[in-house]
Every structure is written in structure tokens, then in C-alpha cells.
Length: 228
Image 1 (cartoon, rainbow, N blue to C red):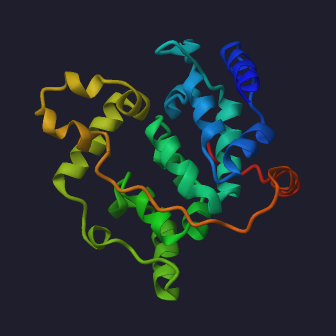
Image 2 (image 1 turned 120 degrees about the vertical axis):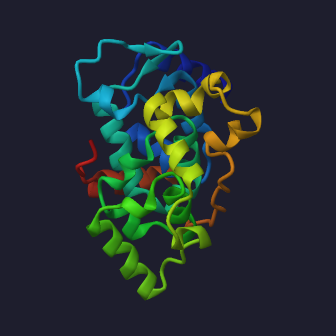
């Protein structure tokens, strides 16, 4: 409801912490309204600022998530991989470093083929660690993953370049601001540099259950995976 949304906006702006329960409500669903509302008012910091003595609390006028909040976000996301076609595009376009989802093998083991292809398009798939490559090889053998055509070859130089640009600028600034317009590159490349050429995965409706049941199940089965 609108009054509820306004209350949530005030809480988010005031720095209310988000736990695994709140993240489950935002991620364990076939709609992205709550997740997008949260990310309108908060900022996903780049990983290196979470593990150093980074003093800033705001970025671009938005309050930065704390380390524990990002950990809870990633743990819940990895437990809700069957909804990844909904939440993954939202998180990536609002600055989540895709490599964070590759620190644990669960995403590669459980994601639908189309979702997995989408995620791999945001990284250098040719330099994945041997354990992750083994998972992909096993899934391909079992025919639970069909790689897109370009994933069968090494990444193009243009893809390597945009990965480097993202590394230098940070995924948060690259994806959430207009900083790409200040780069000395043709405007026709702006969308490419922000990975907007990658087609989002289609949504396949999972078995339905009330979100409160999904929250309770997530809490019972919640695993604090090593994510950051």
C-alpha cells in the first residue's frame, strides 16, 4: 500500500537495518517491487569498501548497506536461486558485483540455464576457477545447462575492456550513475559498457506458496555461506 511504502521509505532513509527476513520478503517472490523500492533508497557498495576502513556512509545521496546487510542479501539470494530470473537483473543493474555470486558454487549448481548464461555474461567466463569450471562441465554433460553460443569461446576484446572499466570505476558507479557519459568513448558504446546489450532471462513461474511460508522455510534452512 502507499502508506506502507512511504513508511518503508522513511525507515530506509533513516538507516533501518535489513536482516535475512526482510531480504527474503524482497527476493523470494515473483515481483521485484519491494527490492526495487529498497534499492531506490540504499546503495550497494563495491566489495573492497566493505572489507576496509571505509568511512563514507553515503554515496550519491543514498545510505550505503553495511557489510552484514550485504552478507545477508547474498545468503538469501543464494537460497532463492529459483527466483533469480527476477532479482538478478535488478541487483546487477543497481551495482552488485556479479563476482560476489561466484564466491560460492551454489549459484552455478542450481541456477536455471538461462539465468546462468545471463550471470556469466557479466564476468570473464574463461578465467573461472577450476572448481567452478568443473561444475559447468558437469552440468553441460548432464544437459542441465546449455551455454549460449559466445560462452563456448573466449571473451571478445571489447568484453574484456568493459570488465576492466567496471573494475576501475566500480560496478556501483558504472551501473547506477551517468559516469560512462564522461568517458572518452563514442556515445554508441555507452549501453554496451553498462552491459545493457545482455538480454535478461525470461521468468519461469516456480511452484507457488505464500511468501510468509517461504520466509519461514528460508529461516529454517538458512545457511550462512561464505560470501564476502
